[in-house]
Image (cartoon, rainbow, N blue to C red; front, side, top):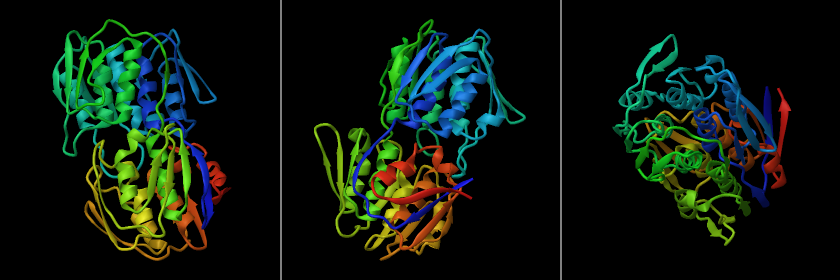
Length: 420
């Protein structure tokens, strides 16, 4: 098991953003809808991607993965069971359910695992697929589904906390072969869902409304293979924005899509940063001498992402004043609070609310990552803290950030990966 040794650092220079993990995973699952080869570029080399490769290989795909390009082909034999030993490590693997059901008329997928950030039920997935005519039940930790044929329906997919990205992905993929027109109302609008829809359309699907809360899908008989490029990872880009803010560092971010970061850039400006976007879509982040306190509420896209709540909380720990963070997507996603307080932060949490009283300094400590985005927050705090920080269980960060320590080192960060 690895850990990071981190010292207070001043960053400068340029960092390049890779492809989006959260876009790549459902798209990889979507290749189950075709027997033809698919070539997918700009895929980040991450633990989660490797896990999905393993799942697809079990399900009958032949895969090569070199230099951030996936080539996915079909074997003669196909299976419909996604085993627990693989699915347990990653929630996005549940996206295999919809395409398996659509293509093979049956699926058996283990209930998903992933980060410990509070309850994340699969009720909207099941509701949507049942609306399409699937018979679904849970047996010994597996979600079992079958249908002689799926029927086009008008489906409302809103839940207690709004739309669901993965449920939208599952129902969207399941509906591509239905007879007639399926309508998904209250669909997730995230760029990752728009990217999935564009991939399916390139395969031959008939979809309109991508990027909006109303998707319309006219069923087709079959899908073909295609070549496709994954969008930039907006969460990785914003994590480096947060690192620049916390360390008071001017940095240049290339390869990102600024249009996917509108709410994040607005928060950064409110925190006192100067943000400039070039004609080539490069981002230039220049913080002021201190961080202004702000109020942040996590919301579905285009609101502020829950996947950035922890990273920006780390910044606000050094703010000049009191900030309020409201978590409306995963109300229990505050595992990082205790670790940040160990570093001298002043955070009080009550339910979905966290009150952050800014401090002049944070102090290095031995801290432990609890999940993917919390680990990024602790790395950011370590870069801004006085003295030495040791972040353990960094296998979490490897699930979502490709070579993050190397990218930070190129910016001047004092960070080293060591074996525990």
